[in-house]
Length: 115
Image 1 (cartoon, rainbow, N blue to C red):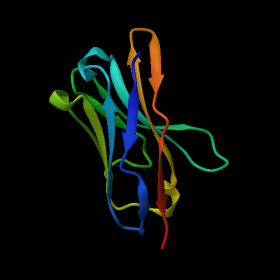
Image 2 (image 1 turned 90 degrees about the vertical axis):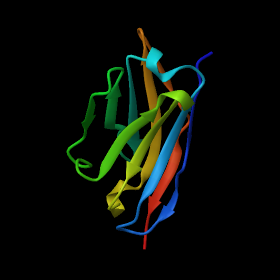
Image 3 (image 1 turned 45 degrees about the vertical axis):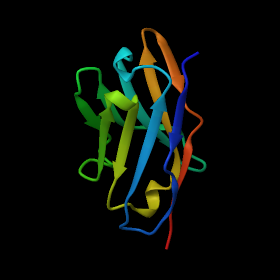
């Protein structure tokens, strides 16, 4: 059973930084891609960042230039470095991985940006 476990969420002030981690139970290179999504209260889940098997990355316009997705293959971990956080970044952040045609989700980690 493939498992994804997020960590690193918490409370941060506007302008601050956090780094989220997503630990996979399998090699992350077996996934077609790994993604971070987020869901704010009362809103739909939205795609934040993608890293493909070959290392290409892509970002939502709302986080471009502020967030960075990366990976550590030896640790089977994908990261989301979040800088210059804004109030509107408050959400539950979910790790997602596509393996063949199967999509796996973590349970999420809460990020709260508040003064």
